[in-house]
Length: 309
Ligand code: C2E
Ligand code: MG
Ligand code: MG
Image (cartoon, protein in one colour):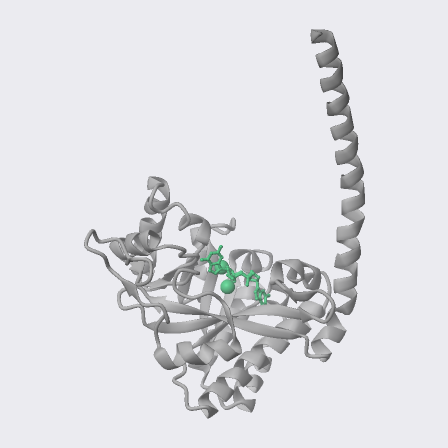
């Protein structure tokens, strides 16, 4: 009986292994077929106006006032629907499409600011993510200046977000480009801070004005003492260097309360505001605060008004 059971278990294991191998082989070409299809259509999709931004609010931790927006790219694909950047930014970075896409983004953000201004809405700085290849384009500062002038946008309303890996490959080129952009009056944020290999020397050298602490350090903030220590030491370093700090990926009231206790000045995350299409952002700009008010319950932790009942 035991031998029969072992035989059957062996058969099942073999069958599973074969199925996994078959599915693995079938799955990979599927994924790369779609990737190739997306990559081939990138340039025409820009021309055809298939890209748009969703905007996510950034807030000051103390009062939860809106202090900025981050523009997050979406591809409204005619066949596949809304595609998120992780599915196509890497593909675009393999070709010059990333430069065309990045340039489109800077112009689109300036145009959007001009449209909100025309609608009489209060404006806050809009941050656009910039890729390494775009940052190394010697003409980037001139291009940014032309976009600002075309839409009559003051440079202080445009912010660029760069990652450590953007700058590490060609530090000299990146620093030079960023210095010129800073000189124009743009704010520069160091995105996903803590996930790269750049180290503190880069923070000191780069002409940045804000550090955005990566959401991986925020996720377990309530339970992980080491994450709290990393956030606290980042805050101390930033204070010493005169830099602004924003914590990314705030998903609940406990994380928000902890960031408040640690003295983190700015926050961004699904708990306060999810990235939203332009039609929904006007209400956020008009209110200047998250639509769903956040309250502080008796014990000190924060909950959304609705959750707190
Ligand atoms: P990022 O710049 O770090 O943007 C933040 C990402 O985290 C966004 O994902 C946002 O939707 C997500 N997020 C925000 N709050 C929360 C939260 O509370 N919890 C969780 N789990 N996620 C949160 P998204 O829009 O998918 O963008 C992913 C990345 O794609 C961005 O990371 C950025 O590196 C890149 N990206 C987006 N737009 C552009 C662009 O216009 N140009 C370039 N070069 N890269 C872009
Ligand atoms: Mg970003
Ligand atoms: Mg980030």
